[in-house]
Every structure is written in C-alpha cells, then in structure tokens.
Length: 56
Image (cartoon, rainbow, N blue to C red; front, side, top):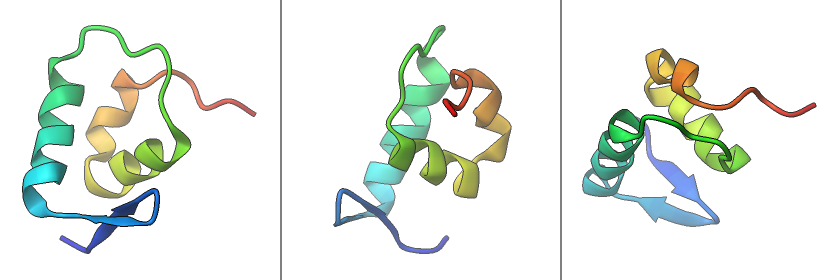
C-alpha cells in the first residue's frame, strides 16, 4: 500500500486500518473531507458507495 498523507502528515498502516474500520462501521456518512475521500478512493474504492455524493 502506498504512503498516504492527511493534512500534510503521513498516515501509518494502523491509522489507515482505523480509518477503514470507521468507514465500514458507519451506517450513514453525511459529510467527508475531500482528502479522506481521495484516500478511500485510492485504497478502498468499494467503500465509495458509503460516502455522500462528491460536491461539484
């Protein structure tokens, strides 16, 4: 898995795993940071359906 950064800080594998588990556990996600959306798209594209629509 490539190195991911959020707000200029590197995310270690445990942080990425925690992020994935959180997204999987939420029933509804109403707002998401664009950087987090990009991380999800690169690492777990199957979870994009759980995210709210991308704003124009």
